[in-house]
Image 1 (tube, chains in turn green, yellow):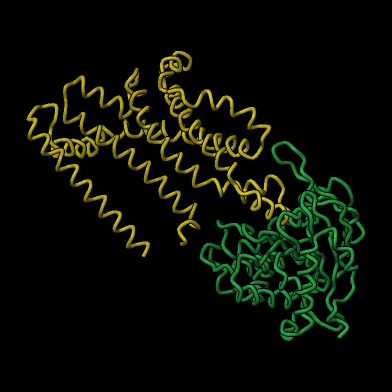
Image 2 (cartoon, rainbow over the protein chains, first blue to last red; image 1 turned 90 degrees about the vertical axis):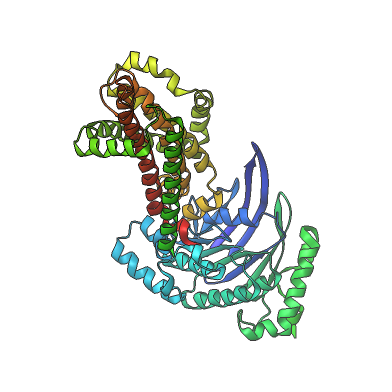
Length: 269
Length: 253
């Protein structure tokens, strides 16, 4: 389980300290998928970077399994929108990188990565450089690299936003399959309302700018399981996206009226 | 397709060489003076000098100077360049010196260098070395600085520390820029080599050119000029080949 305890993050720009997010409290239960959604500039990425241990919060604590995070953690994997893969390493070498950095010997790396590439349908492309792969396959490879390290926490920063709609949906399915198999805790930053509604067990809506704050929290209607194709077509899905859209429009001030964890109107139906 | 591309490249280079030789021949016929012999005289002399072994020690001497300079300067410049590109503190220390010293024509310091280091190989290697060093230092620094932050973050998130980030991200990302600056600086280095070898030397292609000039043996002079040109071309090709092997990922699309 991951807990954010009034976390504030700021970054330096031209020598000045700019607050990115302020006073974030949140809990991410083990095995859950949480979608963080908000307009650009609301500090989503800074929050992910703090959870990854890439930046230190200027106040507050990030607790993972009860321990305060002090830096990058082996069991946390991060998937970025772009740039995640090294163009000069083959697909296999990219996927092996976390294991190489952990000091695992070549034979073990090979066999672990072999099965992960297989799982994501990339075996035939093991020797390709990322430049030769399509956008969808590249993000598949990014997922494979994340899984190679056998993480218990998977952080994703707008992972599918540069993909076309069909590829994005197929990768969402892949992600849910991976989640079902491995039970990894997933925190996903997105600016797509549909993606947040489809993937998230719970949803955190952020708003404001420098610093961003949590505007409201929603959860999936009771009784609905994320990722079923039928859910995407259901009325519950529609009302959840409507509610999300309203919460985003309200921003940080109006957010409180939506309460915390209350099921959407569709949930009662 | 790659092979076809390389073959095409080789054919075009051969055609260009043929045109140059033709122009040389025509110029030699038009001028009709002993100081511009035709290519057949120069190339014939080159072949016979290589066959009887009298030119080889000079080629070897020039090659040794360039390779030594390269072996010392390139790793030092790469290390310092990449490190200062990634460390603002180091950069603020190094950059003012680079800014002031880089535009200086190093070759003008040849007399000073010879006064300090003597007339032997050390001075020549040093001069060529600082030229390669300066060029690669600047390109390495700029390339390392341009590595996207997100790429570094993604590898850090996998557990890479500073050294691993250098090895897996910064160095491979900067390699293309480092190799092109090496290509440029080798061209300059060979020009400077000629000058350095024409002073107080007893070996090297530069010395050979000046020596045959004073002996008024023009075919010999042109033979050595051709040898020095081919030597430069070979350096160029060597960098190209290194790039094809080390930066294979760039030829993928």
